[in-house]
Amino acid sequence: DAKTTQPNSMESNEEEPVHLPCNHSTISGTDYIHWYRQLPSQGPEYVIHGLTSNVNNRMASLAIAEDRKSSTLILHRATLRDAAVYYCILLNNNAGNMLTFGGGTRLMVKP
Amino acid sequence: EAGVTQFPSHSVIEKGQTVTLRCDPISGHDNLYWYRRVMGKEIKFLLHFVKESKQDESGMPNNRFLAERTGGTYSTLKVQPAELEDSGVYFCASSFRTGLSASEQYFGPGTRLTVT
Image (cartoon, rainbow over the protein chains, first blue to last red):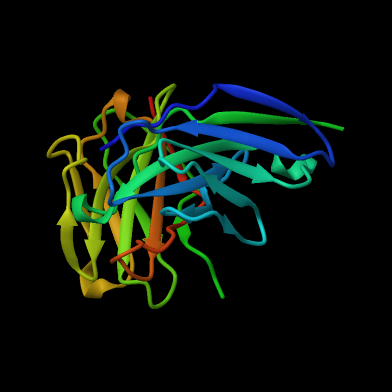
C-alpha cells in the first residue's frame, strides 16, 4: 500500500478552522484518499474520502492537490469534540478494502 | 439504526486461557472487518469477511486466532491460548459495499483485552 505522512500533532483554537495535511507522494491512480478519526476511548470514525476532486460533507472538507500527492482535511470550525487522532489512509479497491492506519495526527483543541 | 456493537467491552484473562470476542455488525452490512491495536502500536488489520466467507485473513497473527461468521451475521474472534502480547484493543467494523469507491467502514467501540 502507498504510504502517507502526517504531522504527529497539531493544535487549534476552538471555533477556528483547522487544516490537517497529508502527504502521499507515491499514490497510484486507483488509490482513494480516506480520512478517519479516533476520539478518545472510541473506535475509529469515518470522516470523508475522495479521489481527485475536492469533497465536502457535514463533518469536513477534503482538498486534494492537483497532482494528488497531498491532501488537506479541513475542519471549518473546530470544537472541543473534534479533539482526536486523524488518520489519512490510501485505499485501493484492487488490493482489498482493509484500512492501513499509520500514526495519524493528534489534534488538540484549546478553548 | 444501531451501530456496530462489540462484546465484552473489557476482558481480563490469564495467559493460557481462552477468550471469545463478539461483533454484531450493522444490519445489512455484508462486509465485516477485525482490527486490533496492541500497546503502543498502530491499529492493524486482522481479517475481512464478506458475508460468511473469509475474503482476506492476511493480518491474522498466528493460528491461536480463529475468526468465524456463521450465517453471515455476527462474528466471533477466539484467542486460544491467549498470550501476554495479545493484550490490546480489538475493533470490529462493517461496511455496506465494496467496489469502486469502497464505502466507509463503521467501527465498534472495541474490546479491551488484557492478558495477565
